[in-house]
Image (tube, rainbow, N blue to C red):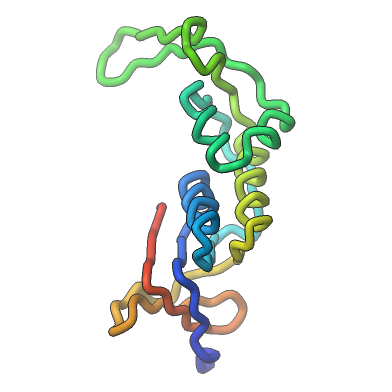
Length: 162
């Protein structure tokens, strides 16, 4: 099967997780054309996790704070963690200037960010698999993917968040 003619975007992002969709939202706020590629056929269940209070201004800057808060994530008033040690370290959010953190419903969180990116005009292609690339060209980057039939995408910028 021969690829269709090249399709151009300013930026192609591989991965529709929080980093990829946040990047897409930020780039769309700057009027760049963005394509997000995701190998999954749609939003999927992922194990929950917590989000620190410091994320509040980031969510505000992305323009998703109101939708995020309406999604009903459970409040988190602190964390216990053990990083490189056998002892637990406690972080209380009671004195945090941004308030509490959240216990995330990851599927819901990912969907919120994807919808925000799409609302701003980003293109999101699920079930897209890279066949080749990224390969540098004179004008940027080229990748080949298979979202049904082979296609060539060209972008001056290419970013992978996997």
